[in-house]
Amino acid sequence: MGRRFAICPFCGCGCGMYLEVVGEQMFAVLPSQVHPAGAGRLCLRGWQAGGLIESNRRLLRPQIGQQDASWEAATGAAADSLKSVLQEGPQAIGVLCGGHLTNEEAFACRLYSTEALGTPNLDSSARAVDAGSIWGLEQTFCMPYRSPVLSEIANSDVILCLNSNLSWESPQAAGYIMEAAEAGATVIVIDEVDQGLRDLAALYVRHKLGARGALLHLLVESVAGSGGLDADGRNTLEQTGVELETFREACLLLRAAKRLGIVFSTTALQIPEEAAHLAELAMLREASGAEAANVFALRSDCNSVGVTDMGIAPVREGEIRGLSTFEMLTSEGHLRGLVVFAEAVEKFIGEGQLQRLREQLEFLLCVGCFETATSQLADVVLPMAGWGECEGTFTCHDGTIWPLPKVASPPGESRELAQILRDLSATQVPPALAADIMALRAQISQHVPGYGPVDWQQVTSGQPAAAVPALGNDTQDLVGPAREIPELAGTSPERPHALVVRHDEGSWAFDARARGAEILARELADQRTPFVVINPETCRQLETREGRSISISTTFGSEVLPIRCSAGVPGDVVMLPWQFRDIAQALAGPVHLDTRTGSAHHLPVAASLEIPTGT
Image 1: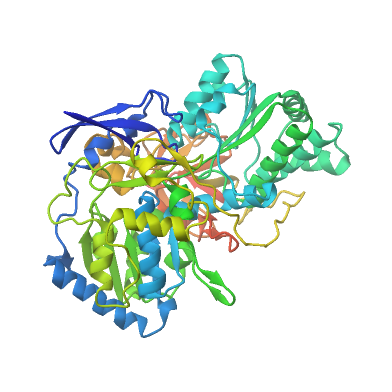
Image 2 (image 1 turned 30 degrees about the vertical axis):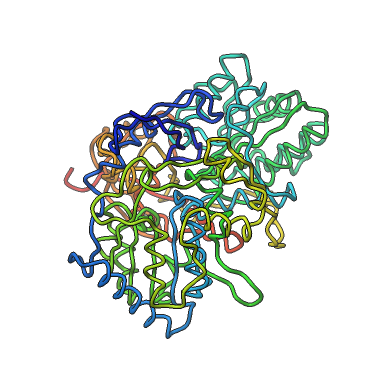
């Protein structure tokens, strides 16, 4: 029996755990009592991490056109097809990486993409979610952003939380908020929809859809000043839907905080200016003598920090401007080839749009661990070793680097990603890709800002090291939110409701890893069939009930979907869970892309509700 330390492979909390193994068969996951993120706790996803190694959804053999093939034939076919596409220029190929690659895998992908393929179109799925808020924080703090360790949340006397769905987005963070509340901390929740965390809040500030930026702007102005609002400010506050007394109470609590903790998930807050206001609020409190004012931006994936540090981002040098994730996946007719490393494209654009993207591509290469809609449409599939099957490291939210052990051999004919990249590049322009992991780490120390002093042997022995990268050279300006609240798209008397696309408890339903772990797949089974969530009173007004279907119409289209009820959803709001990407596009239109950061989100739209004819 052996016990090896590891980092949980799921959300961005980065909880420590131990893998207990017999030989090469893992049979237990145990939480680390001393790791600062989890401190002896794991959520449902963490407890099921062992199922990833023995999943029956694993890709086991190389494939060409969905037919099993030898490694030599598959890598040769992939290299030849990529060469053919490259004849149209390096801009014709895009590379998309998963946010759960190890640091070593991500760096190898960067070398392969920029040197063997020469493409500037390189990005990660994690950066596509995190970039907006992290960029806003960094532009305001004027320094690289690293979150404090999550356990520091529990030491706050006032906690400002910007999304009420942390219980499933970042469970450990929600646990620390609960711990702080039980110890007497004051919790303020600001959110347009209540998805559970309101129960812990001493003050719940519900605002209208799209009004969060203006509300945060007013909070910063008020906390910085005497607390009063001029006529324009009162008018803006009225437009946000927040009562004046509620606003004043929030300001008083924030001004009185000695140890302020500002907590949000990057999946919920993706607009740079909103994150910038939170950074301003933290700096104001510290300037006013608070003992601490910490911003906890909870990342979307387990190695979001490391993958970005390794340079998995669009290349932007002079007139060269690489495409970001959503630009690659949604730009009509631009890309001719796409290489996907350890990610399911359908998670971001839906299977319908994936089909359309596939029709425009001449070649799709999928390198991954699990069967996905992406692998089923790929020209060539190459199975790679996954978590627990190769040695590596993760950089957690606070910038500390932790080891990941190899406790099992890759199943079937799976190979480690670095070896796959060496095989692919053998018939292309070979990048200087090291032959072993220690040599690869030496390259990381030489080429990745902030990783030069890292003692990799120290990390491997279980003593974490810290990495602090340089601030990016992006000099674009932040733009403050308008004092007026933008009107919902498609507003008319016939559309009295507002449709909002939000992350909820089913956000992981289409993640390849969650589907690969058997118990998680069962837990999320009822989250893979589209539905909408409305207030119970809205149901009664429409003379229908939960479980029946309702017709939703917007200026973009209409859909008939089953109803689920939640008292946390305002009566004039219809909530569509984020994971139903095809439905989101049909009802809310294309994603709104922030070209500065590459992040994207759906804007709320006006909607009408009707009982379908014949029901």
